[in-house]
Every structure is written in structure tokens, then in C-alpha cells.
Amino acid sequence: MESKAAAAATPPHPSSARFADSQCYQQHAASLKCLEEFGSDKSKCLEHFDVYKECKKKEREARLERNKSRSFFS
Image (cartoon, rainbow, N blue to C red; front, top):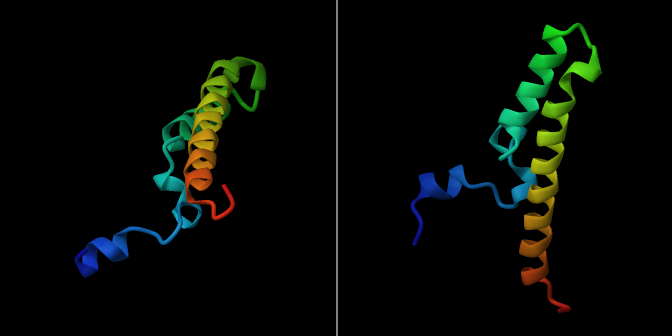
């Protein structure tokens, strides 16, 4: 049985977690920092965007797999 503190720390659904708890938060922050540094010149930050986009893709795929295994209809 989980303790009350552990249960309170874990959101009921991954979608209800805070964005700062996302696996891609560091990549997101780095891309925003790059934009600030280069005065919104997106062409200088393409590498940061690509890394963040790839992270979000993997995060989404993992979420879909989790949801697939929980489905009542599969």
C-alpha cells in the first residue's frame, strides 16, 4: 500500500502532471533560452528545436503505448 505522501506526489494521470515535470522540459527551456539570446532569430536555434521536437515525439509515443496497454478494447 502506498503512503499518502507518495500518492499525493503522483498525479492520477500523466497528462495532469506539470509541464516542468516533463521529460522534455530541459530541451524546451534550452530552445527558449536560445531565442532570448539571439533576439528571436529562429534560424540560429534550429538544433535546439529539433532536439525538443524529437523528445516530444518520443514522449508522445511512450504515452500512446501506455494508453494502448490500458485500453479496454484491445
